[in-house]
Image (tube, rainbow, N blue to C red; front, side, top):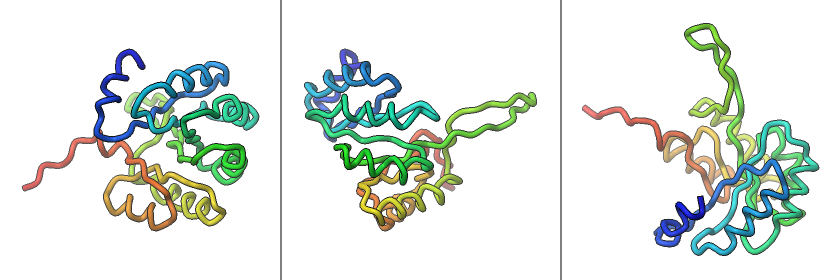
Length: 175
């Protein structure tokens, strides 16, 4: 990815935050160190597999601390319990990872994966409010579909907002 995108990142008008899947601390540390030398990479956001042990996430923080700010993307269930430990250990912020869910397909087959869309916004907004109240630097994410959603996240205490899949969804044609 660095070979493919670093030149574009250097020319970007906005700073870049690179998201890495961080299930293996040693590998993650190596990737973070490579990103530290790239101009215009403002921060690295680390995402984790579901149900990964807190100890592995904390080890990732310890191993990856360096020159670039680290954002830890956590499910809402871990934001208030693990978030303070990560911030205390040197993480710059916590973001909210999209939850996982399951749906039945038309062929009566269970499909699992990440859930996106406006229906997850109320839970994400409540998590942002709770995190901000206890001093966690939180990036609002999850179900942010409109400008009002983003404004509500900021009003609830988010330091920044990640937009949701609305950027990738076709907009309805206006009449």
